[in-house]
Length: 479
Image 1 (cartoon, rainbow, N blue to C red):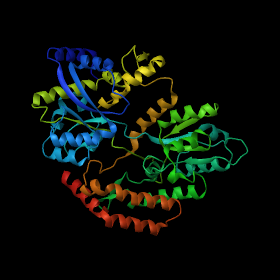
Image 2: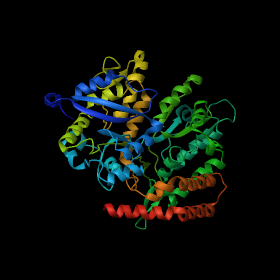
Image 3: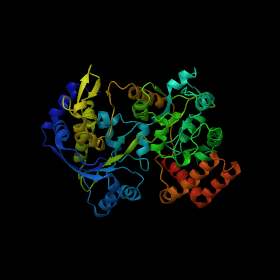
Image 4: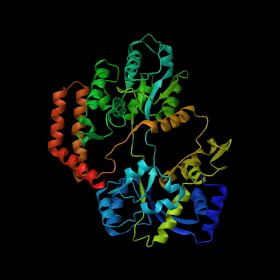
C-alpha cells in the first residue's frame, strides 16, 4: 500500500501540472447520472477535469458501434463486451493503445490480478484497465434453523449435501406438521443458478477444459453428466422445485423467502437480501453460508468468472502521445488508491458514510437517498478495486466477503476466457440453446444419456466443431 507521504508527494507533483482534461464514455446503470458532488472531490484528488458522457446500459453496444464507425471516440471508452466484433476489429486495426508494457511503472496497476488480466487480453496483449469484479461469489445459502431443528451437521461433500436437501423435504424442518417444504430452489439459468456451481463441485471444467490434449467444452466431460444425474435424482425425488426449468429468479427467491425451500445455490451475496425478506414473515428464521463442498476427489472446487465487467480503453485518435497516455494511466493508478476506492463506493466521508475504528464503514441511513443519487452510479468509473473496508453490522455480508476470498484458493479457471472464435461470436447463442435444452431435458427425464449425446453431436455438426477448432487454434497461437 502506498504511504500517506508518497500520496502527498504524488498529489503535489500532479498539482504542478495543469489539470488533466479527460473525456470519458461511461455506462449508466441507474435512472439518472450522478451529480458533481463526489466527482468534484475525485477531480481535486486526481488533478483532472472530467467530462463524462453517460450512455444508458441498453444503448451501450449501439453507441459503441456508431462511435467506432465514425471515429467519434472519447479519450476513455468503456467496453463492457470485450468480444464485441466491431471492437475486436478496431483493436486489431491499431485503434487503441496497447498498455501492457507501461503497467510496471505504476504501483497499483502493476499489482493487477494476473488471471483477470489474462481474461481481458486480446491476442495475448493488454489494451485496457479492467473493471474489477469478484472471481467467484458462488456458494450455498441455507436455512440454519432447519438444519439445527433436524440436528444435522453442516454438509461438507456432495453426499451430505444431498442428505440435507432430502431431510429438508421429508422431515418437516419447519415443524408445522405439513409436507410443505423441499430442499433446493433453482431457476431457469444453468450458469448462475445451481447447475454450474454443482458441476464445479463434481470436477467439471469451467466452460472449457482439456481432454486428449485439446480444449473441449465442459458438457463433453463425464463430470458434467454426473451433475445432470445428481440433479435428476433431486428432481425425481421431489427434493427441488418441479418447475425449476421455467422458474424466474424472482420466483426462486420467493420459494426461499416464503419458507418453502431451504437451500439456494448461487451468489452468496444474495444471502443478506434473502434474509431481510425472510425475517419479515418469520422473525426467528436463521440462514448461513457455505462455500466448501468436497467433490469426488475429496477437494473443493468452484468455477470462476472472468473477474471483470469489461475494460477502459484509450483510442490513439484522442490520446495522441505516449506522454498523455502515461498521465491517463497515472490517473487510473490514483483511482486505485484506497481513499478514492472508498469515494467511488461510499461517497464522501461525513456526508455519505462514517468510519468506525478506522477500518469499517457505516453508511449514514439518513443519507441513503443522497447516496443512491450521488454515489451509486459511480460504480461505472471503478477499475481496479481492493477494498479494505466494508459496511459493518451485516454479518452475512461480512461472511460472504470472507468466503469469496476463500474461494480464490480453489478456483476453476476457464482456459478459453480470453480466446476468440468467430463462429461462437456469430452462432454461439443459438448453439448454446441446444445444450441448455438437452441438459434440462435430461434432468427432467425427457432424455436419456444416449439422447443427450445425440444433441451434443447436433451441436458439433451445426458449428460446434468449428468453435472447438477455432479456440484450439487461438490457444496455440498465443503460446
